[in-house]
Length: 206
Ligand SMILES: [Zn+2]
Image (cartoon, rainbow, N blue to C red; front, top):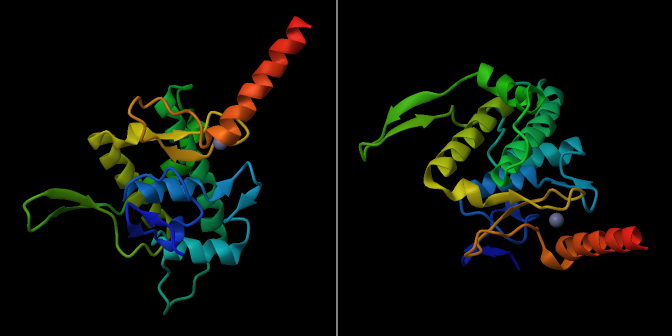
């Protein structure tokens, strides 16, 4: 059975997230970052075919079918690097160190190929729009950055966090009333860290 998000069928590109899902369209940012599962050691971008299929399903990279597509190797590298940039961006939510030039470099590369345009919609709203469909990954990543900008404006960005387990760093959406959620999953990462800290304290005491 397909997983659901508030009763809606979950898009195929988000099926690996499973739990603590961000609302649409921020879910796309979460699903992109969580293509790497450091805890399980799995990476959707480790296999070129799987990466190509996932990026196309997510609408982040839909090459023109009538043209050759020589740029995929570079785009795959950019996907992995930009994923860590965006992970660092999410990490800022919980107040870690300021972002470094290295953190931001892959996104600068995307911004250099700026394809944004202003649009006045029929509802009178002025919007920034990336090139659609996203022929290159840079186009798709620009769309992701716009989703991040909108989430920062409406406050939902602050609920997108990284798991506090340094071996995990999974992106999760904190729906708790207190907004103090710190773990992708209390039963695994939360308790694991607590037990580790407890062992360290006991070792010190002993
Ligand atoms: Zn975790």
